Length: 199
Image (cartoon, rainbow, N blue to C red; front, top):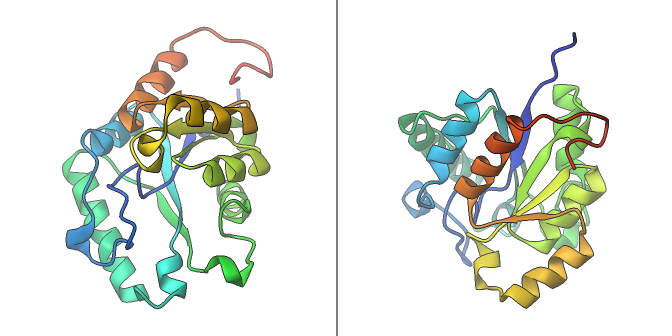
């Protein structure tokens, strides 16, 4: 029987750490959302690989350079390690919307690169998002879309969330990354069969 890699794609800001309108520019500005790092650890311990896919337009705008973003991500990895978790890789888009690149979400480039790197069918990959833009990227890439209400979506009313879900109909909504992890781990113990089992 062929082993199928269990992979989750996570956004960064608003999912792992507190979202900042002015971008995370230094390690001390990277503040984990309560329970998020532990959620990654629980997924890891259950055999899930976790990969980050994040837009970082602050690079393209000159607000943060590569040395600074590497320092932020080293700090993030250290905090994750302290919580017993890990990320396999960080994929990020450094461009601004004006660059019209293929890797800035809602374009699917980052996810397609992840699928290629891991040799995995993206239809089997849950993607955790906190904006409509990211859900659209998940949908376009063929990933399974999940919305958490711990970041920018926390500001939305139930009606606004419903309107987002109507635009990306397969979306599952969770309070935060911890609730998503609960959902995924519970689902893993539910007997399923057939090609559409993930949905």
